[in-house]
Image (cartoon, rainbow, N blue to C red; front, side, top):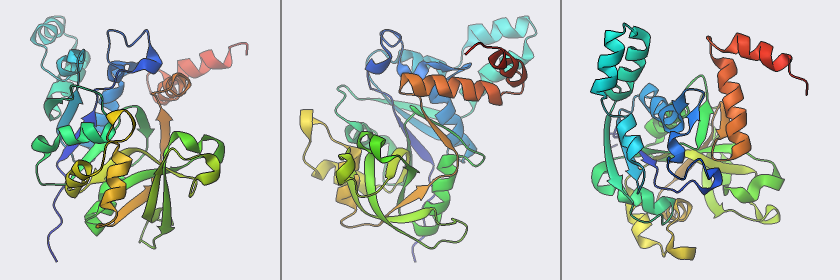
Length: 296
């Protein structure tokens, strides 16, 4: 049996325009919108680092320079904080640039998630990799990417994160048809995927299991993404690529343990802000008291 390659790299597609958050995203990338006091994309990056994946590839587009600045060293700011003896803040700023190796590739036109992943092909090379959509913020005791890596490291196959979604909301997601797999420690959470449908009508959905923005993929996905015909608007969708890959390779789905917030949606973003603030040791207590006192 061949050795299963370690996952060292994670791809962050970040070239989208973020139209759902206009006017806030007119001059600021949606990935840099702040959830309490950290930009959305940093939560995903920290999840990868906590999962042992330190090589971050960010797929950017026009107007996304602030993402690069955020993960770069800031000598002036560090010097200022050092001179004012603000060691806690200095530590948190340094941690951002020290925590990983980061590289960037441009997606000149937003031609779908599959196209964004394909843009990272040269930087990823012939090895397995993770994909993280920073709109999906996940609070979990064991990082979601780590949960997927456990499955990948056992089977050596691609694995996607799944979530149970009410039928009335299912048409907003890629949905899988799948068979449950007996796997030690997964307590009925692991599935082998048999088919995928992008945004089906509720009555046509093969299940209530939706794919969310966490993937661990084998490098064969790149070939699949080049072989599928582009869909509407010339877009290449990752779900279509996975469906193509399914013809020749197994793909697993894991109902991850944790709470997922759709921070790409205004209401989801507000919910995440409240929940993450309440979880903070420095803010949780006073914020909870404030919320209790509100006249609702």
